[in-house]
Length: 162
Image (tube, rainbow, N blue to C red; front, side, top):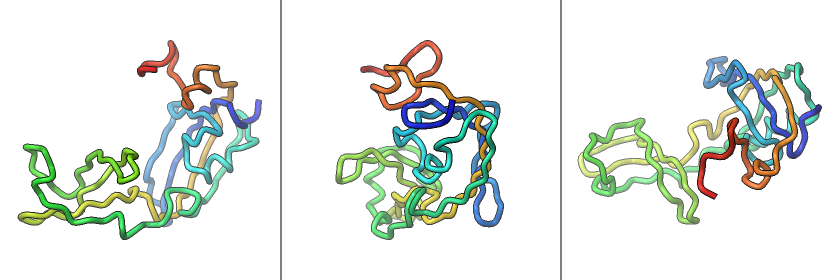
């Protein structure tokens, strides 16, 4: 079976930056996604279309087909007291926040001053060229439940509320 819309693909991959540093990897068939449901970045999904179990590809993906360019408008300085936590706020911490459009997003603390915190709503890999080495482990048809929910379910079914 080839990878196409409404298929579940299992892949192993290594992701590197332009310097060849490994940014992420998944091995032993641990990464599973629903093709055509925007579960992975568009450039990688396009590169995997038409592949089948046993295929191996190396692909470089520009920011426009990955996490986009860095947007300076997603960097803000906010009052420190906006953070409802007893933990010390330090650069690198991540929090979940809601965008003005109502979407959930991850923000990263980039600087901390006495009264202010600089936060960055850009994805950590925004603006980067991404280099993937991918092996296709297996491909199968998605179940009706997976298609209805837009993501792959673990063996035994769905574990989130409907």
